[in-house]
Amino acid sequence: MDKAKLNLGKYNYVFFIFLILLFITANIPQVDQNLSNFILSEYRTILILLALVSLSFILLEVFQDKIQLVKEERKQIKQSQQLKDQLKSLNYDEKYILSLFMSEQKTEKALNATNPNVVWLENMKFIINTLKTEENKKVFRIDPVVMNELRKNPNLLY
Image (cartoon, rainbow, N blue to C red; front, side, top):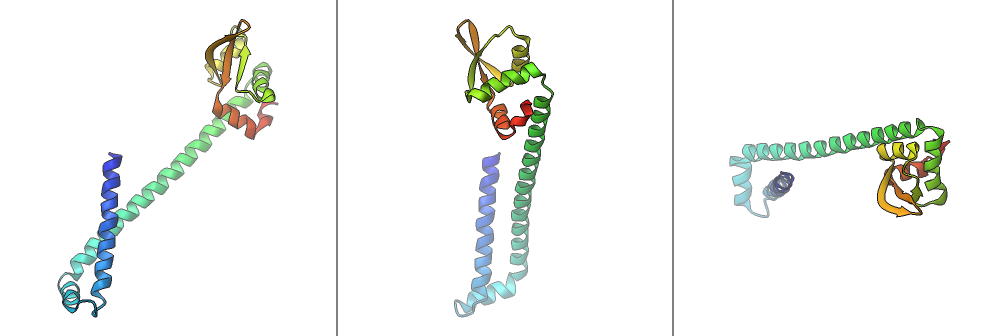
């Protein structure tokens, strides 16, 4: 559906440019006097209406794109705030586990999978089990979104 919408939008832009060029050419009598008389006298109203309809579709598309961008920004800000709130609400041990990833600047760390705090962080999807083992411990990877948020705001762990 998006591809069809894109093609229709493209055709609409081309059609609008064609109408504008037609009006410009018609208003220059030195180019072709017959064309000027034909367009300006017989089909002027219809062509103006077509240009206005085409322009309204162009403006509608622009406004819809801007509204979509604003919605996406608001959604991203809301998700970021929810993540911050979740990180703030963690207990000391859970924050300590996340700080291990941050202090060593590693995305993967071997942790005890039976530790309830590790299980909780995995359930919250802050860390991800890589299915690797190292020294009888499972290797976990910190979620990249969580890592970026903690890099931006390290005080969330304290």
